[in-house]
Length: 64
Image (cartoon, rainbow, N blue to C red; front, side, top):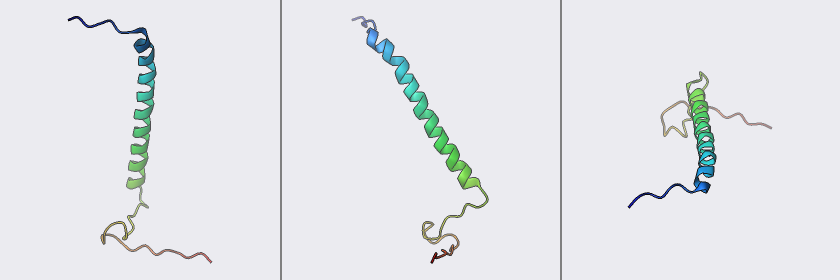
């Protein structure tokens, strides 16, 4: 049983699907790079409440 030739609509949609895939991949890469940059910055500290007891307690300033 031979494979049928690709329909014309599939040929037209292939470039659109590739473009959407590239945009999604670039967005994921951007989020990963921003996360890496934030974590490796000198000012980054995990609050003790989110670190499950590991870390320093960061005082919260109250605004009046």
